Length: 274
Image 1: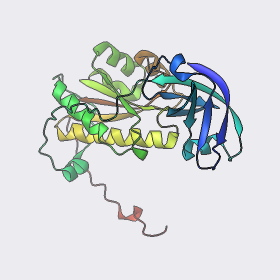
Image 2: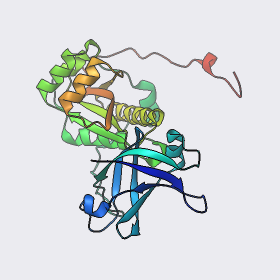
Image 3: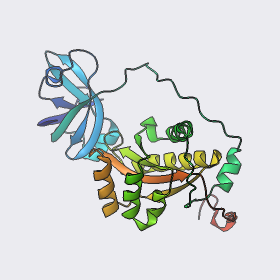
């Protein structure tokens, strides 16, 4: 990781804003050719972008309006304290083949209305094809500006599940679950916490609906900021600083039945104004 101070300024016609890179990025990041993708922080604010070559070993990085706003940039040249690391990204146009999903005969509206939180699981294992299908559901969730900051940690290790269960009474069901999925947000990709949490929540709901649609059971365990459980989870899963654990989903074959209760509350609907 490179640490440096450099100016942020607008170009001569005032249309674009740049951070000046005070070193030869190709040489420093060992990138003799191709686009250089980078991430890090500017004055403590996370960012992710790509460098623009100006020849002679000189590089700039463009700053979008959201990042400028986060930095409090008012159009006047300002000095920035930055960190920067290179990132390995998939080449443009290269697509990974999507795995074949397990089909579900459940109507989407029925899935939404009948899904319930399941906390008791049978000892029957869940196949890898089902887990892959569930993860695919999470990846198809809506995401702000199509940034897709979500990462998914799949836990199958019995000892690790038991360890996480013992550290949080609200997540005790992890010990008997077939597995768990930890939904994390990449702060270098989505720097705004509100959008990061919203994206992870949308992925979490999609995963829960996918679990229910396949006849499995699942429950959403929240990860409170600054909680001991969050800290222990980060250590146990060896999460990098850029990843924020937002939710944990325990899943497995259900070993309980719950009474369906209606949730239609027309008094909570408002039109045009409160």
